[in-house]
Image 1: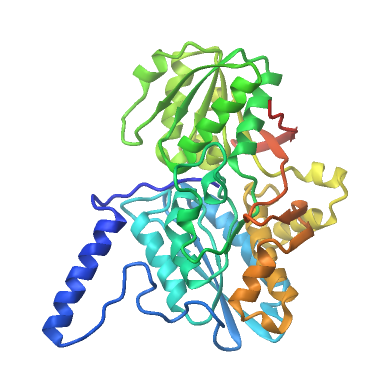
Image 2: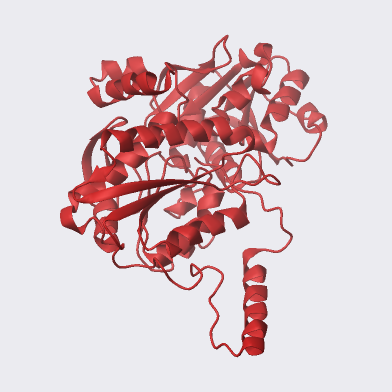
Length: 441
């Protein structure tokens, strides 16, 4: 996905790094020591580059396990654990150890906290047995962890990041992206979900099909929300839909009534995540504009947004809301003859007693399955990080998976492009309706 982070600290990572160096130097002078490690180098080594140590290889998962994201992240973890269980917790001669980390905090729940995310990445770097890092869920979190992991040569796969700038400098990226995330000058990152140029086009295509003449966009000002809003705006204009506005929202606002009252459009896109107060955003927009059509991205495709019993939007508002997610329903997979997907739904229900898993459970499964199959593909070099990275990025071709057949290109992007259109059922759950064949222009 997709989501971004908010940093509760006043100082940024550069300022913290400077203070770390200063304090370390002062301590070194006092103790007669001679060296200090940088803030993002993993704390002095351990796992950086080369060969992972031992006959047990460790795969780390880093996701927000507090706040509104907790249930969705647990679905991702359950998918990852299922794939690992099916492999017998082994790849060739190597045992696989799985470690789940929380990149959120009590002070900053529901999304990736900058300081905690950096700590998770450094933990993986310092662990000599690390062979893969699965995460982050939020695109802004990956902006923090990716440079740390890349410098150490550790391969990374995200189940959900969609921010364009993590892999390319296409529309929606910020200046300096994506190069600034790859200090080692090599690509070590891949994702199994399409980037937001595709989701933006999918949302615009849906609005066009629904007869929208104009759209007003709110974005949560995070890496994910602001970037996706730009993509939605571009695609809407290309399809002849007037963009009436694109306003940023503050998660700490008690309400958004004044912004909602200014909307003069027949359709609305809330380009944000649940954890950035987007239940309240949709409530206020819906109340101020009783006839407006409402659309949300994958950032709100979770029960914390869709189910009023879990703090989500009320049922009457849910009836007016459509959501795009880059996964499809079981019936669609059956139509396509995807036996891998059918087996996933069957095994997931048998293991977790859940017949309608969160849409991101299948992405968690595929993230782990891709990691394990990448290790299998390099055989006895499964502990060689460089060999694993080279196999993952650019050499993943024609992969038959639970998501369909896809490649991972030289940028780390999946070649999958289909998005699913979801409505919200009476039980307050996202329910698959159809495949969106996104039209760009």
